[in-house]
Image (cartoon, rainbow, N blue to C red; front, side, top):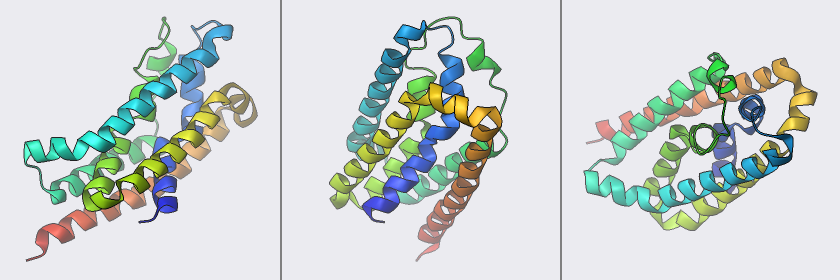
Length: 194
């Protein structure tokens, strides 16, 4: 996988357009003049978590004695479940009912640095550890695109409306289902190899 493919995969998993509605509803209790600062703070926190996971994830896997096949299969399952939630989204009532300013949860984690992004980073870095700088640049580009979209989330929400955002999220979910199935097949293939 090259940098462009990894970047597109990470953008698809981060799903910035699909998260616009969640960010807008999660920021309702925040005064309008603070919203951009809160979004920027959450984006930076998510980036720190993602970069730490990219560099320390393989060490944690080694510490736990987990094989690459387990990573592929579990990453595929997590991606598949996330993709199903994107295609058949749950009620956003929990986010809308928040009465305080969000901090780390749910905007930074799991909306940006969710389990599917973390699993994908682990798969990338464990399959080709020598290309870690390529994966870092893919992550930074994907995060930059996500940051640009989410910083413009109030304007995008007005343009897309709820149905438009839902349609984009479902389309991304369909793409992720295919990626998840391929990860599962890769894991099973690696496991069955003599």
